[in-house]
Amino acid sequence: MKKVRVRYAPSPTGLLHIGNARSALFNYLYARHFNGEFIVRIEDTDVLRNVEGGEASQLNYLSWLGLSWDESPDKGGPVGPYRQLERLDLYTKYANALLEQGLAYKDYREGSENYAIRFKVPENKTYAFNDLVRGKLSFESKDVEDWIIVKDNGIPTYNFAVVIDDHFMEISHVLRGEEHITNTPKQLMIYQAFGWEAPLFGHMTIIVNEQKKKLSKRDKDVVQFISEYEQMGYLPEAMFNFISLLGWSPQGNKEILSQDKIIAQFDPKRLSKAPAMFDKNKLAYINSRYIKKLSIDDLAVKIKPFLDKANIEIVDEAWLKLLASVFQDRLSYIGQIVELYHEFFHDDFKLTDDAYQFLVENNSLALIEAFRKMLENQAFEVEILDQAIQDVSQQLDVKGKPLYMGIRIAATGDMHGPSLANCMALLEKDRVLNRLQKVADKLRGDL
Ligand code: GLU
Image 1: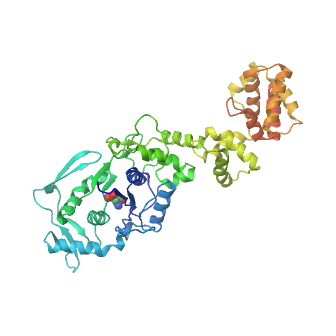
Image 2: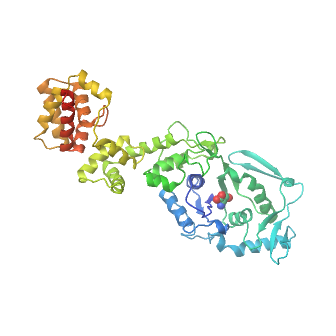
Image 3: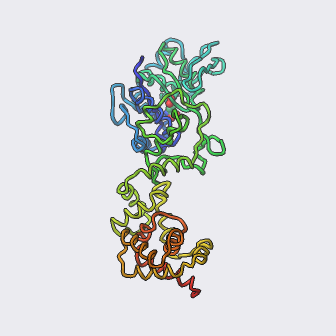
């Protein structure tokens, strides 16, 4: 079998978009699964659309996602250069060869000495290929008009340059977006003109939004750039996992899979023909699962920059870890810590009707007053607080829900939440005592 060599060929026209990231990721999976090579080539011939820093940013976000590559402009390799604008001589040489063989012709723009080169589309030919995703596809030459392979400024068009490059870079398989299906017959014409073997093509389905419409960059409802996910605190491992499920499914029903497992299980036969739905809730769920797997120390490190940015004061290292452990199970993305923090530490402390009702029905006033008194001389550490809960339970003979829920409501305002002692330690003494006082006053009818 031919050595597997695949490539990701972005145009450096902007930030890494989820659709491009998916193309990159599937080529990467293909290479790693079949022990092949993964190449990054920059298709920068659309000069006006290139943006400064576009290439570096694409590469940075690919590495952030956990992809690595074997050959690229930054790493070099045996078949470089890996930027199309540095390969212009090669395209000119092969375009001239087509001119000489009469397979292409010069097309002069009126009143100009410059000419574009057009490929002469053969008559009555069928261009067929076996698509890795869609099976057999075929196109008739009569539906394609003679097309420009080199523009009159000497720069090749995509459909021409891509063939020269894929050939000389010895690309064996091309996985790319469905929008390139109609480009494929043009590319096959060039392979045939030179008598070269074409790679195998696989065109991945479109990505649609939750309304089943093709995801468009203008769709403000869906965050689409990888950098934006990084900024919100999505984890790269989770993004990798989620993107791998856009148009592919593993065998079995386990979808939370590490990169190694995805590579091992990857099977191009399981690439889907149906559009891939971008399910935001699924992404949030997958991300939350990866957040749950972090150690508290790691989570604390990841949380810190978000707190700093929001000007939230970090009491000390231990407090930061406590915060991480209290909220670990509630985070869909790391940046959500800011919102959760504000909800949890709100100064304007109010009870919902349900919560207040619970306290009334369970006669919680005595419990809250006794507990508050007990805490006055205590240090606010998790074990001490756990002990205090036990002590007040014995003292007043209250247990179970009336005990825990009563204290939780008075201390946090919430009827549910993570470990009560942890919550109180995190809130710190003054805040808890004030809250207990406020609730007791209200129950007594003083407020
Ligand atoms: N530069 C092209 C794109 O970004 C690459 C297409 C291909 O993979 O052939 O769409």
